[in-house]
Length: 300
Length: 300
Image (cartoon, rainbow over the protein chains, first blue to last red):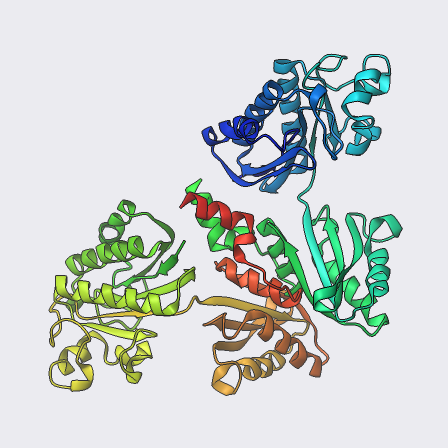
């Protein structure tokens, strides 16, 4: 069984009736909706669903079409950077599917979406076709209003699919593939924020640490402790167990212990398998040995 | 979602046509068959399936009825101890169900089975109604032929359900509830079997170790190593991670390292959750945070 997660973000987070219209087609597809988070300040809604690749692509397409139909970017305001009615559509491998396959899925989605809507569409992150589009912030530079000026004249803003001009109401869309994002926090037995900051600097990519870790120190005043708060952007290449052990070693320099950790939100079962394989030095363990995996495959 | 495993053993492991007849009803129930293992030497077949409690009970009952119909114990020979056509029926909690609930399920099964077949039925292990029936070997003492003599005259052999006399062709049946059995082996970086034996003695219940661990040393000649080979009979109370760490500490006394470990066959996802919680000191992790759990619940 292949499982893909998709997290379309569309540019409406205030008018319930419009949000309702946009997400309404989800029922028609064999996908499991994990989360729908409208944000009025951002004036933006994130929808998270998971399922087999074809069903996920069709569901994403249905939502994207509705967003194009119901959102007018010339009237949109919100705190979050955005360039389109359906702003970003990332595809995320969860189980039994490679990143390459998710990139191919993203490209098929992007081509169909651009063909059907005439919205210029850019591929980003793992699906990017040029290095300067790997970072979503670069693709979205200038937002809807800025891109409207540049597209068609600046060759760097040429879309991967669709016309070389902005869609008058729906703007432009970024379609990508990325790894599963895990929010992982490690709690330290001290109230000294500087210790958490030092450890965050040691493990995060931006200051010399692990390639796929973002980290910052965080004060948890009500518990009288501090935390290394992390986003793990590729748990296969920068795994939780390895980062955890680095934090433990760094904390020891300050005479501080790890008192606990937290995984916030959902994780693929592969995360647990990786942890068990590492700590028990498991040989030849197969995720299909987990009874629940077997049942899930049987039900599919 | 509640998941129960059932592993009925019936006394036919040679005649394919009879085995086929007995397992044939399984298709009719919403259970997932994990394994069917006929053993000609034992002249016995183990069937393993898993599902929600009611479906599992009905499927087990259907198999049990067929075994009573098709097996004649007066003509049965085989190496494995046995007292009935349907010899043992254990119910095993897998997910979202307590041992108490599995005991109740076993009792309901036993009562219905005895009512419908007039086969005397004994409750064993966690479902036992008296201490001298906790051990299956004690319940099955003397096997079919011995029990036939004693039942009705010896009050210790009075069944929990059904008549006080043997069923002339189907014998008697043991119905129980037990924890999930995990085969867990730890490989040592030495070819000295005595080291494996010493460590096995340190961790196993029978010689002073963990309550729910059976262990022995084992020579893996083709790899030039030895192994502590274990049956973990209650992974909640004597967990894999704790026993693993004890083995590591004991091995260090001999200057030996753990070079790997193996989980043989299937495990509930809870085993992985327990390991991750322990080694990462996870706070408030919920198995429902695993994406595959969510999908399994949604599909149920």
